[in-house]
Length: 337
Image 1: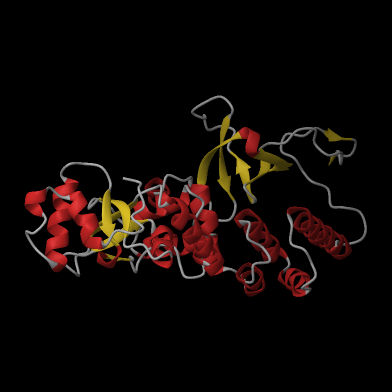
Image 2: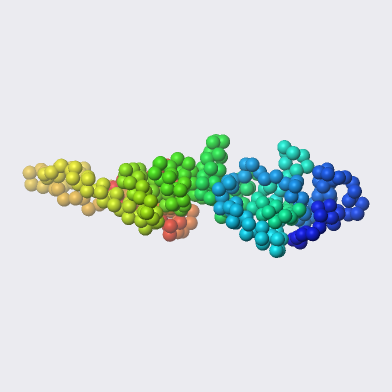
């Protein structure tokens, strides 16, 4: 059913779809629906009349999605005129308008088909479809922007769903959900760079947020330069600058004179009873500070992973626990816990 009906009228198409004894059973919307139901019973995609289809007003893709740009739709319409719609769309009955259908997925193909002057579009009727299914469909086709993903996560969180539940719902990791949820409450300077399209990488946005917490004025000044490229390398350099600046400031604030001696329980005493002022050669509670997906955390060495090559860590920003691949973990420092 991938044939394009360029020169057939809508009634001709419906006659081709239905058995002869059903063609004249009705007219208007009721007749069209009756014929579609008969064809659906035989299986295979239907030639759905475009004038019976409505776009879902709650669909996750917004007006600003690159796939809906005039250029993108015009190109797709040209391809449809030439070869037709090769992948059927999916629709469900419109509860607000009996006899009509809402698009589950395929809004671009629908819009482009209208631009191409088509009367019908191949599709399936699937009533068992919800908003999460739409998100998954578009998400795994890389057709949702980071902002659209964040907005969906925000709506689900507003319903009371936890991040882990949302992650399972859309077949993504908890870290993925956490990173996109952070886009809903960005510092003003970072939000402006993200909304303006200067930075689209979600991991990079989260890295900027992390640095902003340490030095908001420095990050705001850095981003205020419109000629400044925002890349992984430049953000790493910004972070190194901020950390070095912080270290120098702490050094300048440190009291002058000899450091106070540290008394370690059980340490041997020397001479007049003073403790030896050499640093101990071992730590009581060493901790591995790590970075994963642009987020700082601590490796949980004592927690058993489910498989070789994995490990548990706790993120510093929200204390979330996550089991991750060690290959994706960057060691930052060994510190005293």
